[in-house]
Length: 196
Ligand code: GAR
Image (cartoon, rainbow, N blue to C red; front, top):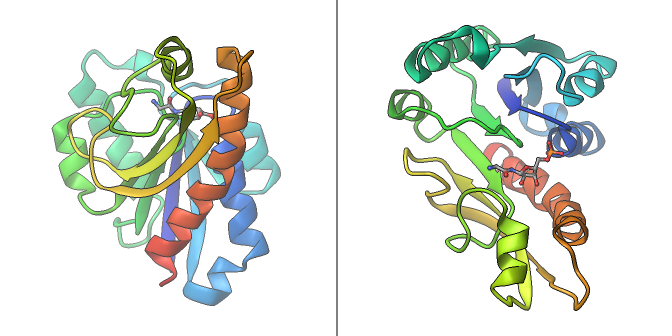
């Protein structure tokens, strides 16, 4: 079967959207794809509770226990690959995973690594995307699912969604509008990659 490993750092709502879509659309029967594990770099990430409630294997690789990015990424890779019988999961999905990954990690998962970013890339890479879109006077904002390269928020675009920026938007209200769309485009992108 095609094992999906999802990496989170927090609430995990995108991870939950993928888990729910996989269940509702019967990905495992349709194309052999399944969410094999959810891994967090934060021991208290709320998303871990959701994954456990769905009886999905969970793991924590706490970045605080490592003295270098390379050491953390090496441990993370070992844990990710351990969730596939062949040591080669079909897809590694970054879903609100707030760590920058080393070129070695990205190379190891070349062609099998995707991310979601809360802006219309290539605009607004990095953090605070919603406040920056508001400050720039953007009429539209959105989210992007993309392949991951060793450049931050770079790589081929797989899916995008657009939302309006409304006159009285705050970063929070805009983020909520964008997040609703993220929950549609991320499962769609994963399904298109694994179930074509
Ligand atoms: C999402 O909006 C995602 O696009 C963003 O963090 C949020 C995670 O929410 N990711 C980044 O900013 C990546 N740099 P979630 O944990 O509920 O899926």
